[in-house]
Image (tube, rainbow, N blue to C red; front, top):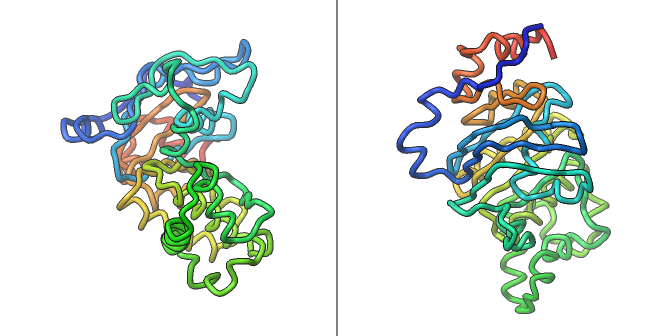
Length: 271
């Protein structure tokens, strides 16, 4: 197995003038430690607005840790320490005065396993609005319907909104969680293996949903599924042992990668 290179190969096709003007997320020199363990080893990356970016790589390579930097989910880990800058729309989200709750409204998260609350379908989607102090019933009703429509779930549940979210199928639960995320109108959606627990039909629905959502949102997804990454993403980043090995347009990563390690992983020769 080849030793990972220290500097990722990032082609001009990824960091070009137009991308610099319209980026949503800019990462500079990101390093992460859990205690003495260095999980992320100095990553630079620019993610363009209204695109789907897939993070791929073997288990334990740091892709989920890196994803969770964007909404500061790693802050919950006592031994977590981070260096570098992460800017969203030009604002460094790791400054001391950043309101993390406000950040997480802007940067929504969908997890690997569906995690609806033990509440009705309606209350699941309305939850984020209500904890913001919003009390206007018409506004909440309209936003819940809009979010459920965006998540392609409205037609399936519109006549039974009082039903428990836990009573839905796995695929429906995941779309409910996506609707819950959309209800507070973020601009970025992070997805950590969102279809790994789902059947092929539910997976296809989520993938189609992602394709539609990128018209309005910037989406970053961690996936172990190479076919999924190639189907749904505009850009793909390959991680290995805490380093960003290669980052480019998905078509290039899957057909003509510049780094041998990337080719080996894509073709199943290691990882």
